[in-house]
Structures are given as structure tokens and as C-alpha cells.
Length: 479
Image 1 (tube, rainbow, N blue to C red):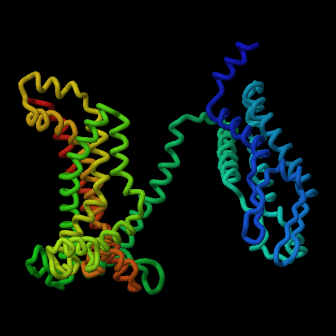
Image 2 (image 1 turned 90 degrees about the vertical axis):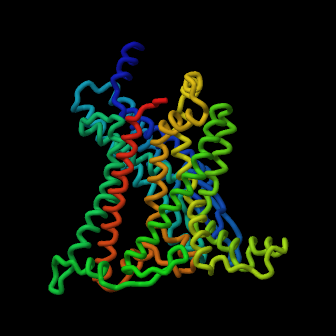
């Protein structure tokens, strides 16, 4: 008997185990507090279905008078109905996969469990919405905003579990076998909905606009706006140059992105190398140091940027320190000077994106076998040669990943330049935003055209970087 039971358990599909777990949680949740009673905007008591039937009366004095609630009848029928549904679902979930021999009986069992899960969810929603009736609100001289029941964290978990259980039961009813590849399908749906479809929409809006009589017509008006023969005079590195308007904006954004990437690589690689070396010697020490570099990412980017702006302001920390040391007589306007403001913007962007360079390089360096360095030294190479011909080529995939993670987003990043320069420096991100928010359909189209061109530029850049990665990977470790 035991051997037969074990063999049946081994033959059970994954979705059957999921269904059993969800049915078990559905039953246990009857005794878990998941309803929170609010009186006068204040949470006063947590209820489970079990505690609701044990203490159905509630009394409290408030400014508008006494509040008296009686859940006795409501608690009785909801508890009875819920426990019947939960027990039935648990019983069927366990019995049908084990003891039903024919496929038709198993399908009936799975679909029955599916119906029970749906019914259990419906009763949960009814309990949440009908627990405080209009009669209770009126009799206590309250309003729905002052007397209500909200779902707690456990209630949210129950909702998710019931949904998963219903999906598992549906899989069983349709005769499908669940495997771990199925968990990739939600990600595929996510990619289609939030990546592929928006890209198709951008492409469509870049070449078509709505006609006056309805429908859409092909147009290149957005391209004409972007490539219009309109020049501006701007300052780059202290030099005044005259360029086509939107090309100068792209050039400034490209300049920010390149220097941010270079700065992150110059600062990030040594840090990642030191952290990886320490992690190999003492794992906990390396992890704690890595946390120090990741920790600033937990703070909002806008707050960090305003902190930097305050640091370099006329009455900021830097000017105060320089004046207290008698190095300057009057405050330096760091953010008003073209060259200094440009350098500060790149510095702040480097600081903001630095963890995105450190993490991929660290993850590759920490996996490099230390015996390779020892072998290189034994073969006569010095430490510089070991690094340049062994360590760095092996870590190059991490460098490429870091460059991609920094260069791509920093190219279209506009928050830091916008805050530090108070909107005086236009970037490609600002331009796209202004186009899209413009009421003119032609400028909207220009924003989609610019987005499409940026996408093509990013794809070309990624292709070049991937090519470099493959070339580095085939180079080997020649000394």
C-alpha cells in the first residue's frame, strides 16, 4: 500500500502539487487574520473568519456617539460556506490525482476544484465588501469613509494563491502537463505587451498620422522638423560652435553618455577588482563592501541630484568649506559657469551610474579562478602582464555588460542635467519629452521619429559591443 502510494506521488504532475498546496492554504486562511476594521479612519481590530464568528460583537465610543456592530449572522453563513468550499477543494485536490484512474474522472475532479477555487474567491470578495452593510453605517451615524473593512496582507496573498490554484486546476482539466518552461510564458507576454507592441506603435506613429476624414495617411513631416535647416550656436568645452539644432542636442547627450561611461569604467573597474579580491579571501567582507556601493541606489535619484546641487550651490557645503579655509573670498558660482557646470554634470552622472558598472564587472571577476594568475606568474609573467593578458581579457564580458548598462540609459537621461542646469541645457531626453507632450500632431510624430532613430542607434551600438565581446572571447590567454 505504501509502495503504491509512493509510486502515485512520483507520477503526479507538478500542477497537481500546486493545486493541493493552494487548497491547503485556502483552508488554513480561514484562521489567519485578513480583514481589518477601520473606525474613524483608525484600524481597531483584525479579523479572520474564525475570530469573526468567535467575537461577532464590537462596541466603541467615538465623538459622534457609540459604535455598535453585530457580525453574528453574517459571520455564521460566511464561515460555514467558506469552510465547506475550502474542505471540498482540499479533499478533491488530494483525492482525484491519487485515486481517479480514468482521464475523464480526473478532468471532472480538476474542473470541480477549479469551480471551488473560483467560488472561494467570490465568497472572499463578498465577505470583504458586505461585512459592513449600509444599515450598520446608517445606524451608527457614520459614512463609508469612516466605517469600513479593508483587506490585509494575508488577504492579498490568499487572492494570489487562489488564482494560482485555479490556473493549476485548469491545466489539469485541459489535460496539460506543467513544467518549468511554462514560467517563461508570462515573461514572453510581458515582452510582447510592454516592449514589442510599444516599438511597433512608435514605428507606426513615426510614419503615419491621422487624416482629417478619419483613418491614417503616410507622412514624413516628423523628419522634416528634425532635419530642418535651423542652426543654433552652443558652447562645447568653452568653444562656441554653430550646428544644426537637434544634432547639437544629440551631440551634447552623446558627450554626456561617453564621459559618464568612461568615468564609470575608470572608477568602477579598480573598485570591482578590489571587491572581487577581498570576496575571494573573505566572502562576507567583500559582500559588505559591495553593499556600500549599491546602497545609494536605494535612494531616489532626484533626491541625490538635489543633494549634489545643494553641495555645489552658492551657499553650499563646498563654497562654505573653501571660504572657511580662506581659499576664496567670495562664493564660486559652480553651476553658472559653462565649463564647471558641464564637468559637475558628468561627475554627478558618473556617481549615479557607477554601481551599474561595478556589479557586472565584479560578478565576472569574482568567478575567475585564482590559479590562473598563479600559473601566469609561474610561467614568468609579472603582475602587470598577468593583469593585461589574463585577468582583463577574461573580465572583458563584464566590461561590455557594464558599458551597455551605463551608456544606453545615460544617452537619453535628462533628469540630472535638467536639475543641475535648471533646464538651460537641452538633452535628447528633454527633446523627446517636449515633442511627445506637444499638442501638435506633427511634433508628436517628430518625437516618435526621434525615438525610432535613438533605438536604431542603440541597436547598432549594442551590435558593435557584442562584436567586440566575441572577438575578446576568441582571443584566449596568450602570455
